[in-house]
Image 1 (tube, one colour):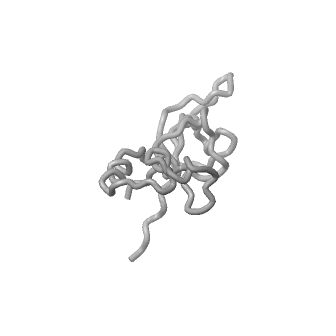
Image 2 (cartoon, rainbow, N blue to C red):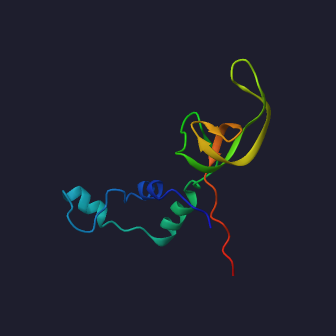
Image 3 (cartoon, rainbow, N blue to C red):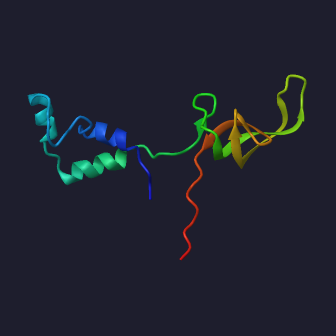
Length: 117
């Protein structure tokens, strides 16, 4: 399974503004009823970016919750309240930029747990 960005896919194949009923004008109707070959659709799906990967906490902090994070683990706080320590990947509870004892720089969603057979 490779999750992709559905909005990016709809934009790339030109159907982001397509509707089945209620087209606002002739241009939208032409877009809505245009035809793509299956191999063209397949090529566009293959070209889409995979969802996931590391997200900068500085650019887009997550909501509070549990995430896979990359951060600086606190050993001894220095005088500027910056952690001294080492970088590591861990699962942490996000709270206001700090994941437990880790100054978070990057994060990503946790995968779904495996299903038991």
